[in-house]
Structures are given as structure tokens and as C-alpha cells.
Image (cartoon, rainbow, N blue to C red):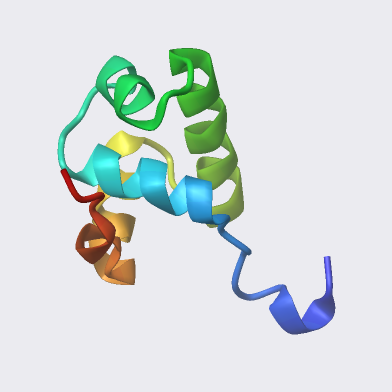
Length: 77
């Protein structure tokens, strides 16, 4: 990891989408259907987010989403 980015983990656009939908209260299955991916892939994205951010659970990730302003990234439709 680059030392200039060591204090702020790089969150991918897909991880931001998953995080935003999680914050809306969607289940892994609902997130998967909305994004056209498998529930296992949703789990992988959220696991990587927990690793990157140090979040211990879904609730902490949902709070992180609001802190980052990802709730404004909801998909249209």
C-alpha cells in the first residue's frame, strides 16, 4: 500500500454501491439481485470493506456509509 494512502483505504465503486444498499437495509440476497451479482460476491465485497475499514459488523459498515455520504449514491429505479 502506498504510504500516502495508508490512512484512507481505497474503496472501489462497486464496494460503495454495496455499502450504500446495505445502509438502506437490504439483505445480501436483495443487494445481489439489485446489482446482478451473487450473494457470495456481496459477502466478499462486505468482507473486504470490513478489512479495509476495521469495521466489525454490518451495523458499523452502515454507519460508515452515512459518514461517507454513500446514501446519496442510491441507484435510480
